[in-house]
Image (cartoon, rainbow, N blue to C red; front, side):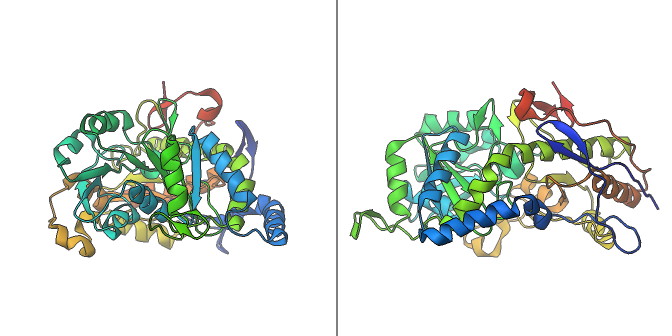
Length: 429
């Protein structure tokens, strides 16, 4: 049995600090949960409760001053003119398509390897999701396949910045502009992600964000946001989230009820100043994972995540590949040692039963289908300790019959401080 121990490391704005605590079971085994929201929220508990109490006392529970403040902060953070709050990330996608009057028998091009909401937004409007395969390294939509999917019925292109890394938006926009098709970014997992210095949500016509509690910037319930640089689109989105209402009780179009909750906005306002620090901690954890796996000689046994050139990866997930038929057995082995994992996503959307009328079959999108069979996410939350990471990697090494990991060097400075970008997993330019 491989057992490793090393000092745990917490990171504060680029300066390393030591933290030797880690949860253990009665037998002394270090537990590594997939996510620990209680630990994440504990330092901000009093601040968040005070913010919630202020909303409660104000009585302004929907689209109040806290919502406006969050919209202003998100617009500035995402490098856009406007940010429009809504009830969820799923609603953000729906509202974005509604703003372009996407309707029955029209088409929206998107990846199949993503969360269900990306496709359900189009389906609910009577439109047809047109699924395109992904790149095997970043899991994002393959831009070279988009043009062939465009038809006279194409109403929008909907790339997803999966796991916290931006899709190749420059190439996508080039194709979209040539055909006069708008691009709506699904940035639900990618707040703060960048391509060549441009933030997710600022490159297409509309960006869609989720503040589900497990996201890098998570609320205490559902909440979402749309971003745009277009004044006309911003006005349209504000109407659509309020039943299509422009002035009270006057409706020029039919919208939905998707107003941002002030209690959720207050929570997010309290967390927003910490977002870049948490991102740097996720980056440090991703770097450490890669170093630990390399030290075990596992880099050729499993597939490690890669970071494409000119990207700022915000690491919503750290996803490895387990070729062959070993993934589920590995998950069971890790679970037996109290190490959390998750599979995002076990069934690509083109093979979901509800989309059977679209006529897709196994083998149509081979890269997406292979990713669904092989990928598994390891814990990557900011407060994850170095000891927990070493334990997780040691168990993976044990499963594959490899030696345990060596102690890695200290992680480099976070990207948001020194603007140095990762070219490959764990390597810098």
